Length: 96
Image (cartoon, rainbow, N blue to C red; front, side):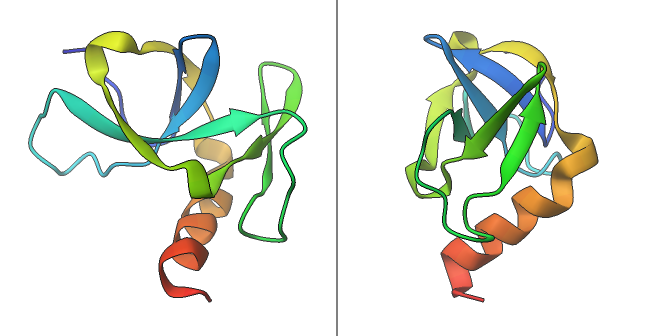
């Protein structure tokens, strides 16, 4: 299994994904991710714009998914923007 930590960015079939799963969970073949997309319709706080690999990309929070770790290739991190990611997930789950 690939070693991915929370807020790592990994490529999946040409799409960048942000890992949102806690590092405290036991290892599993799958990991929870949210895609980073260009041109995705952004809702304030739900879909923050994150800077990755020199590009501004929208966190498509409603497209949250679980994918096989073996299909992901780490390409960086957005840990410095982790608060925006956490807020987006909080808004998705609690509406606040």
